[in-house]
Image (cartoon, rainbow, N blue to C red; front, side):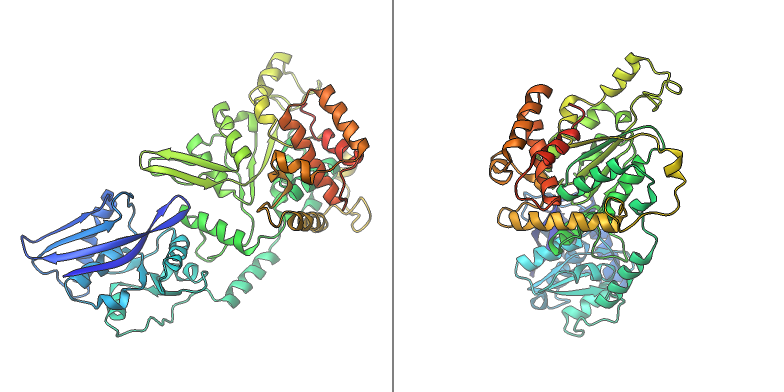
Length: 517
């Protein structure tokens, strides 16, 4: 007897539909799994056999062949245990396969029949919806994640017995499982927001650094902060997510998909509602930063998509690792090629990097710094000019003076003094709204995503601003990339001021933020 069950395999950041076919025929008793499968999938035959035995079902002495089609896509992981079990049960006549004809199944089986959580449930349910399925059977622990997708029913099961009862028409799939309801989700988010959150008001002084943070957040411009130890570089980077605009529904699903595939989705938070903040150590490997491995997995640049990637002590990273960032910073995606295929991962992140001015960190204060000019030059040359040219904003900070460090009463609500995260976020949100309206038909979210041809259309400058930009281009000998970066930053500064034209003051501030040139 033949039976076909629908399932899905993860490929890059999406799921592809897979047909799990089982055939029970006469011949020598054996159980084989074919269809370009890994050793993990082949091991499913023992897990399925034991799980069925724990449910009181013994495999008949027949030749069982399971095929996972199409055969040119590699299948890996334990997500196929449940569909393989269902296909075998249908092939031996233990269940009615018609009931599962419009249902997708994914899940890992334990030897006692329990169904374990897996990664990549959200993209699998989206694939099921796209394929026209009416329902998706998932592990009970993944049901809250599956319910995020509207327009398709999600059924969470605890063990193989639940699947058998459902496929026999003895159970309608209703469960009293503790799935995360919308009210509980709202309460949890509200409680999380009540927790003590980092705030820019905690940073004493450093007004120029805060201004650069606002510009970076408003246009998603990459930011490099240079200064001595203890000047607040790391504090500022950790607080940038607090001033970024809120995620849209599509962005929430996009980020949740990535974390679901990577196995980093919190069990109590099936839908990520906050922008990610990734802070890898400076010893991070190239594969961990940009993704890769024998079976490609998303790296830090992908996990920071739509959020912040903070690289502290940037010159301490290996130069070849730093240079790997050049392509994702320019293209906003990472392409990984392996024998099994080519995988494209999104990498639209906001890079925030921090570095010291010298190996000891105190240059130009010669009362503390003992570094030689050669040592300082060698330290700074660890970051190539091509890499520096891709960073829009360069902010140099100094140590906080005593009178600012001991200030207790913060002046909030006054012009030029309201530097807490709430006030800064209002400025950023207003500028982002302008960009959203301007680029609504282009698929562009921020000014930093503008291409060269689009810059001519959306970055008009006044005559004075044009003369200033020309003088800077000739005097500083800017590259074409540097010229375009200044225009993009100027566009963001103009949006913060609510100006349609980029004025001389906007261009001048953008040039001052390119002090590497």
